[in-house]
Amino acid sequence: MDALPAFPTDSGPLLIPGPAGQLELMVDLPEEGQERAGVAVICHPNPPEGGTLHNKVVTMAARAVSELGVAAVRFNFRGVGKSEGSWDEGRGEILDLLAVANWVRKVRPGDDLWLAGFSFGSWVALQGARQLPVTQMISLAPPVGFRDFSGVQPPTCPWLVVMPDADEVVDPRKVYDWIDTLERKPTLVKMPDTSHFFHRRLMDLRGAIKNGVRKHLPPPRHG
Image 1: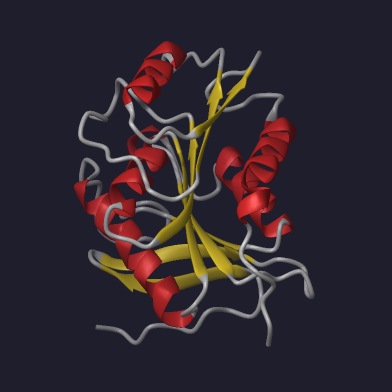
Image 2: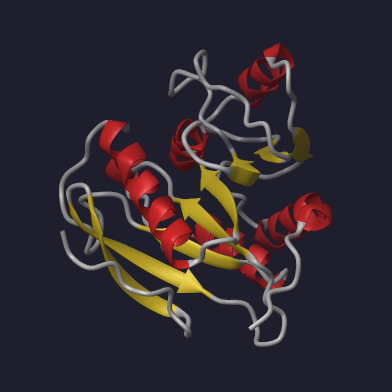
């Protein structure tokens, strides 16, 4: 097992050991003096359909949380970019998330752990949350109808769901109906007049994320 790298002091790319070989990360740090004691790990959409850590929705989510003082860690699932291994239908991708999150917990002990995901990535994040001490969950366009959500346990922490109300990929009604079945319901933001990839509404998405999590921010980071 390779030695785990330290958490970087500058924004940029990083490689860490993962369950199927190295995993490629991109770290987005808050402005100096704005840091809070928290790290958000963000999962990208479906790899077979071209999902990567550079997806515009993923990068906007990273920007939103980092502007609030929470460091963001985007990463490529196995077989994407410089991440080694190959597509595993979701099973291995959950293990990839756990590897990244556990690295964060080792190198930033005491920090709050946030999880976020877009589309397929939101399903992975919800599955991974069952094994992690998550303090904020963000789900963007969760793929209800494409993935089995019947066994998904709602996280016990604050949970924000942002759903494009004109989503042409995921049926919004299926998402709303699924949420209605949950005992612990998320804060749901329905974003009108936009598609699955939040076309022309990325700045609104940024605002929805910031407004949705602002009251759950971790304390300022010292030292």
